[in-house]
Amino acid sequence: MKVINSKAAPAAVGPYSQAVLKNGLLFISGQLGIDPKTGKLCEGFEAQSRQVFSHLKSILAEANMDFGNVLKATIYVTDMANFKLLNEIYAEQFSEPFPARETVQVSCLPVNGLVEISLIAAE
Image 1 (cartoon, rainbow, N blue to C red):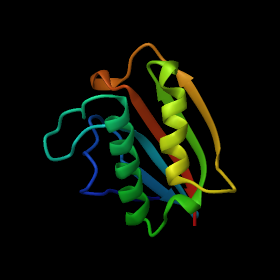
Image 2 (tube, rainbow, N blue to C red):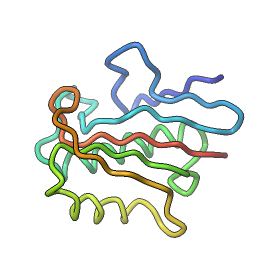
Image 3 (spheres, helix red, strand yellow):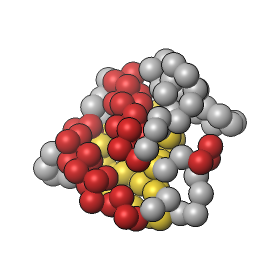
Image 4 (cartoon, rainbow, N blue to C red):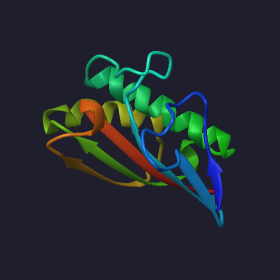
């Protein structure tokens, strides 16, 4: 197993890795909309979502991958009212064939984030 880290994404806030690569599969831990320069959440759902995708993109790049390698996305939101906006931002990142995905509303995310996304990708 190889640990994958990107300096363009925030460091893990607990005992876990940003991502791990094994047998050609990359598992990226849930990313929040934290600005890596300030260590604080971006303001609002859209800004946080775009920051999350920036983190995911940088972690994929560290593993010599991109969004075309993604097989599965897991998305947590604190308000399903943002689902339409989420889909618009998501569609900017991915193209057909789209990865498998679920989106789940939760009551709370770490550091009071509004969205968290994890990915599984393959070489």
